[in-house]
Length: 169
Image (cartoon, rainbow, N blue to C red):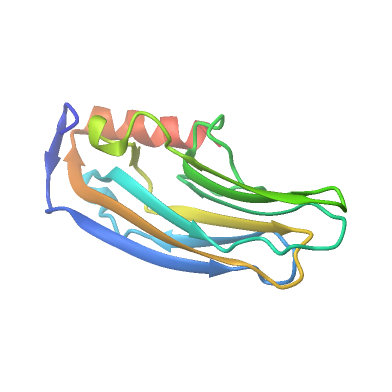
């Protein structure tokens, strides 16, 4: 358990799904955690599963499906280089017109989630899921499951966590 936080729930899982609103179009959804800010409640994330659709094999074009989960709203699919991104999944097909090869990337890769105390802390009331397909023939989707626990912080820790989250945009 992170220092300075007190558990207010047992381990819970939150599941959601997201589909592109149109073919090859960045799409984002907001998932409400229903935290109680009056009690300085935060959500400690222990693990994230992101299952994104496979990209389409498309003539001579490389194609991909990218998905991410973030603590704040984004205008693009995130990478692990962004401090507000908790996890990503990418499926790619490299295609030169003669041959095609598929690749998959996801984070966290190492260390494994079981080796970490937690993946991140969400101090505001929601998290966000993003998806983008590139050069696909049909709109793509993803399913996300976030594992975590509600916890209560004292006033100074809560203020610092909220400020840090808002500045990470």
